[in-house]
Image (cartoon, rainbow, N blue to C red):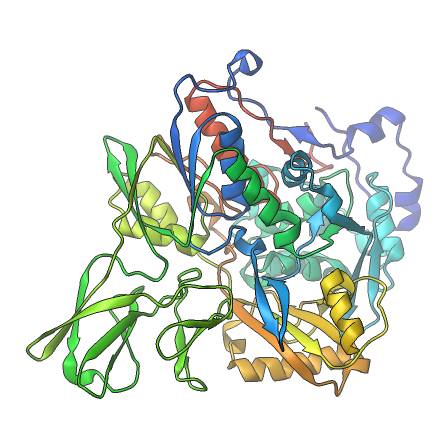
Length: 631
């Protein structure tokens, strides 16, 4: 489709008086589109294979669940492997005991934006749209200037852009008075050209070519929600991000929130549907390695989260103390060893049985604590709090002279398969590939080069003081050392509203999206600073006591660093029956976050359908290029 390019080089009068013919205005509007099918005769192909084929999907987040769902509907035999107790990935949740009351918690607040077409399509099929309610406003709270609030008004370009400028107090239309400046690059997203020219430039440097009020008020606060530092974020990825969330979609800035917690609203009903379709779900299991034969993955070997790969480690017995002592067998193999009063040795894996994160010693209890998701274990490795129900994995110990040999207790469970979809996060994918003997070096290198962004923090606190309801339950913030957004859970979910009313309290969740290395401080210091920031954001809570809290620091969001794009793996791999899913993949189609995960899961399923000469499912998308792209 040809587009009519418009430029403006003066202020509000020039933009407001540009005359578009009806056809010209229509031509530049962003539209919902559908990706082309691989086979020209797609509609004539059969829906189901004549002989059921086996698929192993690894990872129970949105990408894995979407892939499994699409394949199960088509008659494939799907086994979904998830290392956590529950499916959901970053949407997963678990119950906590809040001073004697059981309450549902999760990894943090999620907004389900209008342009999440693949995700909303999945929710519609499952009949889950009634579990959501709309949020119309997108406010930003600044530390050093007046708050801004952007309302989801017209979606007609360029009037949607003018509407944002009109609503903003600290920017004006004159901030667009530079047709050769970088602000117009945000409207020219093209997957090939944008990445070829701008992927090697960091977004902070790029934004030096945009008027500073525009950067401070809109660009930087929104870009930070990518969970990447502004100066470590690819300009091309940043332009793609803005295109997807605003300039390239016909649905504006509105989003929905779940009425209840994410497990109740989304994950549990989707899990039940996968089971009803005949899917096998192996939760509390993860992949140890893949077995390749004749250019195909033929077997998937499993283990429990926290188990080491099946290899031995030796340490000096004299180095073992009567309390738990950490040892590293490799950069990824952490274990703890101690000697009891009778001189017997005991060893456990240092990997959390929730998602395999490394646990640390808990000085307060003598046990262990996972800093990522809040799991805690007593001195025997038995879980006492958090999302896991499984104890730390015990290891065999054998004394050999002055040495102590530690042996992993691997399950050895093996799944034979016709296709594999690896839909885990970046750390999980890298670990699987590192422990597998795969033939394609280019693919191995592309996975090795993947990275994760700086860690992010979610801190949910229960306070003993009530607060007046705010206009909306979620706010982006800007200018604070840690706090990047704040969710008022006592306004968000009925269970939390009920708790707040009965206890005359409040429940607040603070998020730090990307914590710089110099700000990775001890937990108590981070909490102290974030509490001070909360007092500035909501002064009426200053002095309120915390009666319960959950603090997690995780590091699993994808890194979008300058220069990463060319070497990033995509949905297809050089191994003919191995496909990937996840929000970290190289994706020319503009999509981000939960939509990218769902879309790539459905794309992986489509590649399997194509391999079996079956009909593909349609994959909807926002407009593939920006409104100022010619041709």
